[in-house]
Length: 178
Image 1 (tube, rainbow, N blue to C red):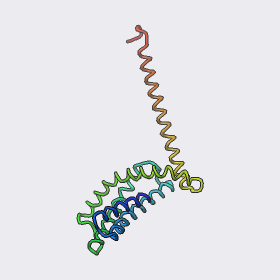
Image 2 (image 1 turned 30 degrees about the horizontal axis):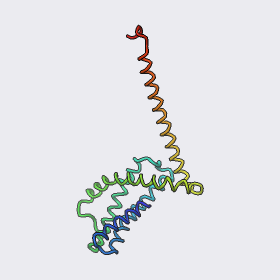
Image 3 (image 1 turned 90 degrees about the horizontal axis):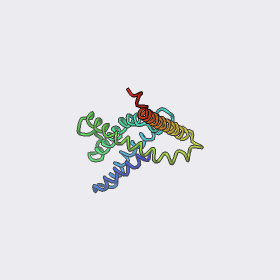
Image 4 (image 1 turned 180 degrees about the vertical axis):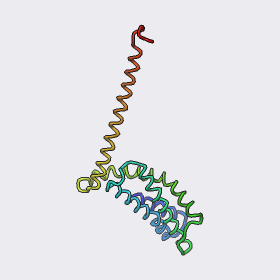
């Protein structure tokens, strides 16, 4: 939800910097920040309920490929309402608007994942003892870290084995070389 808060301040701040009324800045900030906060909370719930794994980009990217364009559509609709007095859709064809924002969502998803991991790694362990969902998330990250450590060690061992095999070929007696 904190990402939605940042988006709200960003959209509202840019509106205020453009010299528009404060009420417009507040409304446009909420029009973008609220949907992003709700989608962000939804994704956090999916992780907590173990519907998607924590720290994995593919499900996150797919989630935001839908969520981000819908949040931007909400923002565009409210902005149209603010300017013209009636809610409306963007001027370009709707599919183009949604496709464009689906492309932008990849960058947003990376930022969302980064923020979630930077904030979450400090927050989840604190609330873990009394929050079953935080406990699950921390356990998922621990399992992922253990798996990554095992892969790293196996790769290191594989490199050592290859290096020993090369050295063994170099020191063979001259008569045995083919």
